[in-house]
Image 1 (cartoon, one colour):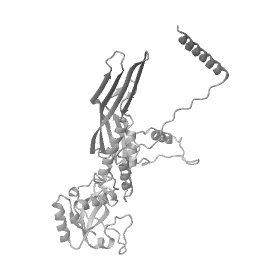
Image 2 (cartoon, one colour; image 1 turned 135 degrees about the vertical axis):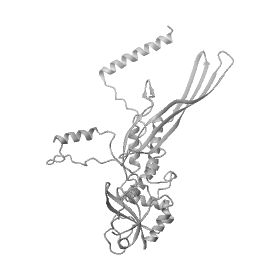
Image 3 (cartoon, one colour; image 1 turned 60 degrees about the vertical axis):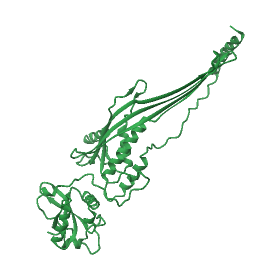
Length: 411
């Protein structure tokens, strides 16, 4: 052993003994954990558009539809030996966040464990809502769902394309210097399929199939040289991969934005180009499809209670027919709906589809009982001063495949 190596070994042993002695007489200071960047709100390319859509939904005079999220499962089976699943297992939770940002009413159906436990405890008298009041189970305690979203992650392609470039240079002498540079890229592909389903009829209203390509890059740099009888080898590198799970969240945000936007009949560019959605836009009903009037028995729709002149009933649309006109004139029956809100939504939709036929008319929504179907809300438009004029206007709409029937606004 050379004197230099002996000296280094002795110093190492003395340092070890000193560390042992110190640990017995004095405790070391705690290590300060490494702290990274501060937490931040999760955002995607569609986060601002979802919030814009949420402001539009909240500004409407009718309640937003109630939507639940089912299971959005990982169906790819892609796993890594060290890290487990390659694709997020929390896609359903991401969809709930997107729905909340979009302004709709989110109903819990994904994890019903706590709710079911509370109901079981209440049934046995173990749950109380105050010091003197036990919780009682009653019909209608849980909120119903209008629509729900389900689907899954259906593709994960770990390497659909990869490219690489290497550059190496060296001195021709055996002990000369050498350098190398490498650049590699890799493309990953992930896809998902989602569907929007009517909770009462189980009809699939819309389907979205989206995919996202994810890019990864790797750069390596190395230098090798003999210096003064020794060897110097320096290597550096950098790897960057677009977050796979963020890509999944982006696809979910886009699908939710398109689903909710289609329920309100918003053009695709609204909220995506930085412009706010106009509040006066006419949404399309999410539920309460038209009850086909052709299959209903003929029935006269009752009139509203007459109001004082120029007085507008509460909770009525700005272009609703006023009482005195509705009580004495003829109108057009344009359909019947399950709720008053859906009838008003249909009116806005018809105004957009047939503006020249409806622009000079006002709408009236009146309740009626129909045999075999119960309470419905009829959508009427007018007023007309004769049955003939109402029939002529209905002929124009019928020619466009729009149901219309002239009727008197009073029994």
